[in-house]
Image 1 (cartoon, helix red, strand yellow):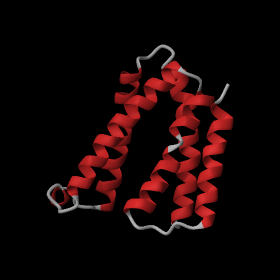
Image 2 (cartoon, rainbow, N blue to C red; image 1 turned 135 degrees about the vertical axis):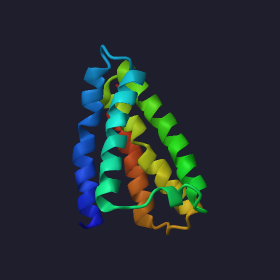
Image 3 (cartoon, rainbow, N blue to C red; image 1 turned 60 degrees about the vertical axis):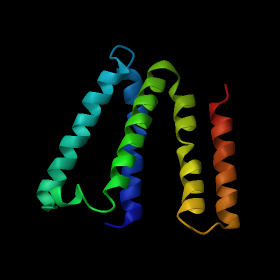
Length: 138
């Protein structure tokens, strides 16, 4: 499948995470919700790896493994904070602020990964910042 189709599938699925988690965490502690929802993610990922017969163990010590581990730490902190924010605040504010990772990740991609900086990207980043501001300010 084309990467854009995967991205769209991810968009559609992830669209429902915040509203569902906001509802769930009105009664369920956010840390418990993290355990349950992310355990489902791990089980699904294990199933996909098993079906596709991708090796796992050899990558635990791969030269790029430290990047996976660092990403895992960032993911853990990000998801724990995101779920806690969803349990405390309105989806219409929390999601746009959290969604600023689109801007910050783009900037890191440009600054650290030598991705091209174009006028179009600068404009898009500017509009993304404006969109977050307009949607999150009450």
